[in-house]
Image (cartoon, rainbow, N blue to C red; front, side):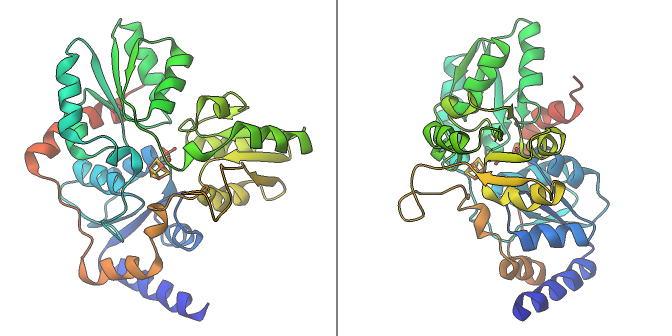
Length: 319
Ligand code: 13P
Ligand code: SF4
């Protein structure tokens, strides 16, 4: 619509005027991903978003995604202004792991190395030995296991269970889940496979074990897009947020992509393959924060330094 086009032009002007760069996650609206791409920003998974933001020369990073992504950007680049279209965009994994309860859990298991998923608050990261994203979680846990370490893992029990299975590591799991990926159903995927037996199944490991078991490839959003290109199959069943279809379809224009079935239809399921918090990012609030700085992220200095250590370990980790 003409209204969107005017907004997009306005945002392009505001990005320049603010010496700002737009860093967007694959689950945000197509228009936001497109804008990030056109203006020299990046569209990426959570690890690449962190790397891109930390290395970029811009004065201001505009992070379109969810709260923990903005916080991570600020922890890694305290000298930059970090803006988000909305400060309300949280994540069920972050919400399900309050810092005080998590800290008590760690206190109760002092013999374990604490590894937390990036989808957590700065306060939870500050309590961790390592932060990981889904793209390097298995590699990091393998490395720790080889050193004989026992792991305390939080917050995603599905991702934790998947890593445990892959590595055989001794892992104590926090009981958290992603409300989007938890909705995918093995039965629905099997039915779809019945219709298209030649289709490959791509799954984000935040999904339940019964769904991951059906996967030809399980991995982070970037890894799934890479797999879509590399697999010979011309039909792909994809179990992750449907926002990924924008870049995935661009990567494989000749292939047919199917959304993996969720628990219910639009009327009954909570999330239906689209993260409600990612969906809060829109052209309107993106322009708004660039105009008035309303979505600026601040992280307390002591907390920032404590959270930086496990984040740096992740960024410096070499397989
Ligand atoms: P990725 O690191 O795979 O992009 O995952 C982030 C996320 O929130 C998935 O739900
Ligand atoms: Fe969190 Fe799930 Fe949304 Fe990712 S998709 S931000 S894990 S609620």
